[in-house]
Image (cartoon, rainbow, N blue to C red; front, side):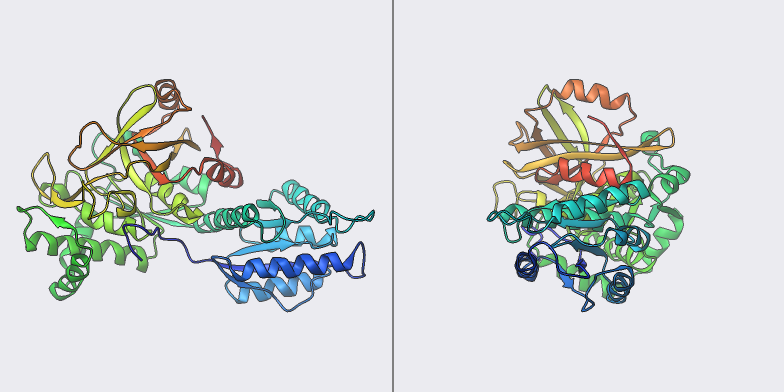
Length: 456
């Protein structure tokens, strides 16, 4: 993967359920055609797909198909009714599925006087049933093979995946939140009640000891991999600085992979940054799809996880530095994923450097790409409940380049000053999350399944 151009995506295996009928009905030939076209689309999907051999016509055959999907490790289920099937299967889907079921309804044949499929009626029946049962689901409507159908199905699959990833996830917190950053305090009870996420504390001394326990040989091997990226390096950065950062990178990665943790927040300031900022290590991990946040911001890391797991790519934790009515200056100390920043061959290439304030290594001075569609979003808790917000815009060239990671977002459809006033009254923390692309509707659909209130 080219970390400057290609975004990481979660690996997903789909279980495809063609829900059929005990006896022929409507126009069987149309149903066969729809299934053929759906299979053709799925062959070129961005996911690994599994279609059970069982012909699914009733509750017994559905359970057999679901077991086969579970045995194959299918994280997401996609249910199609080429012609309307037995509605009594709906509660079983709700009972057995571990993530939102993606219902894909297809159009009628646009010829002749006969009703050909009732596919939408079937999907409508199933989704309404699951809604009454309280089970999450997603919905796609469109002809197989059409561009919009491919996009809608891909988005729905990623949303279902994100739900499955966060439900039951582990969140690691090294130390605590940074001093005075009470707006980023994590509440284990809210975390469990609102998201079914468990918090795991890791002591600061335990973490530091683990960093220094990483072997020199492993650090040198990793440094060789880092150097292949071709990043510029400031003159005052030494090999010893880079080797220590490799140890941070390897330790954080090992923590997340072995516990395992789906998110990690590290109180880098003031303890770690007194001698060494771990921001280069964090930038590398974020670029690889790890949900990681500085300053003990667990909810910020969870926001990154929601973005990454729902297919939005690597996400950037940033301060909201200043604004006017339609622009926000985005800045942080230097841990942005490389995919969102100007590349090594640009006029403003990323550079491994010391932090501008205390002159300690190592951060990545970088500028967000200009002309990039972005979504600014955030998940946070207030009074025991989780909230979410998102706005869409585009990056523009900054008037001045700041040390650290900097950029400017322009949001033409939003009065930023009014939006900011509304958000801070809801406890909106000072870290915001940036993802590439316009994905507000996509993320709001995910929040609906997670039963999280969205505010604008």
